[in-house]
Length: 461
Ligand code: NAD
Image (cartoon, rainbow, N blue to C red; front, side, top):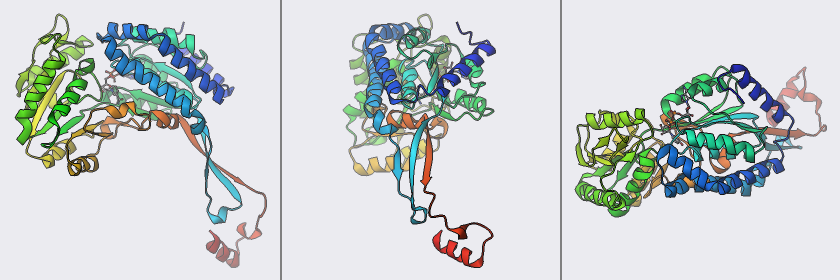
């Protein structure tokens, strides 16, 4: 058994994976296809185990386990398998006239041995979906799941070697120290999903070995609700995602910017939607993953200068927080400065769309911006004027389920991206290939250069 704290074990593990990769066995399309097939079987045959692990780690319902971890994992796998052949195909490129005769193409090459470090909030999907890209690209992979979701981490460590090539795809369980021990070995790529602060540490740890990094980070994803939005739809979609996994979702609506003329009507709709969605347990709090996260959220509520429109109670005994709508908090209070990552939802009243855009653009670039509006002009303004990892119009976070769209942040919300072909490319090297013929081989391009040769070269090149 590997002891992740023992540097020799970690070094041996990475060295073994390097040997396996160098043998070339992960490069073939057959290997990649087989691994993707087996990964799909792993998910389908263990839906109940995955669901149970998520309930254990996060108090997640079976419905949410299927919506947010199981089904999206299957979606990524089947899409990759279907398109693998096309992705792997070399892409011919046209050459400039002066390079003819010759042929040029781009060939996607596996990077080698890559590392995936994943978070606890969707601990199954966010560990597996980068692995899909890494395998599709023909790499050996080390997966380091989050120690904060121990049941899912143990399940991954049990299942992955039983289904996938155990000499090429390895799970290493552990915490931040384990990640650091792994990073110290140097990898051909690391894809990290987690918070911005740890993201900085990953980048620093990757620097000495020049390990290339994709950072899938978090931040405050705002929702702009324009006066001409369908308020019922906006309230339903916002409340739906805010309640999922107790708001512990990187793409959850973090705060709302609502135009003044519809603010009261919208808040009323939002409150009745929340009540409707929680009809089974109207006053219950929502489970929070651990004491640290619970104290952080309780602290935000204690410090708020806004008005609590609904909720506001927390229970330390069972570590729950009620879904809470906070009206017009202070822009400098913790709930408006830090990522919320819980069931609290600040609502800021704005005079108009200009003010909403100004507020969003004065903050670090978010992972996503959601724009609810019935007008094309308003939607276009938000799409064009707000820098963000993604913009979703009249919905929330749906882009995450579309493998044709890259998932990734910008600025403090991350660098690089993956999903679908973008994942394949992230874990591949785009190798430029130029193949020339031996003839013609004109003498004048070689030294010593005469005036006449120089003239000719200027004309040709
Ligand atoms: P985290 O940053 O605390 O931990 C993520 C991973 O990093 C875990 O595996 C952890 O063991 C490891 N880690 C912790 N300390 C480390 C260190 N010093 N060095 C190296 N590795 C270390 O994140 P989390 O709390 O698990 O997840 C929540 C955060 O992740 C939120 O900010 C959320 O927005 C973000 N997130 C982003 C996405 C996305 O797709 N962009 C998805 C989910 C979550």
